[in-house]
Amino acid sequence: MTGKNQHVVKRDGGWAVRGEKNAKDTSHHRTQQDAFEAARTIAKNQKSEVFIHGEDGKIRERNTYGNDPFPPKG
Image 1 (cartoon, one colour):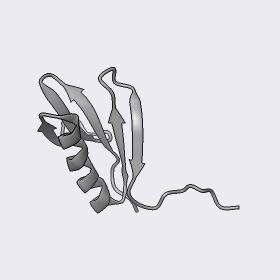
Image 2 (cartoon, helix red, strand yellow):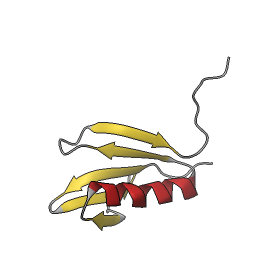
Image 3 (tube, one colour):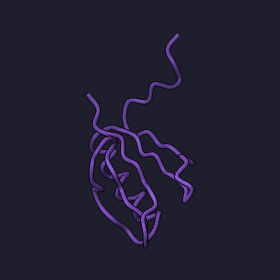
């Protein structure tokens, strides 16, 4: 079983890491890069994905740190 996907999202004065469907942020960071590094560590431990959101809130990048279903079998 894999863990929760991690999202890097914009916050007032910085960036945050939030686990998917969590009510609260996991951590807050000054830069998007710092938040991404924290999210990557969590995702590697949980074998999940990191979704990096831009300042507009749209997902601009995603990275898998576990069992990647691509390329698909067959």
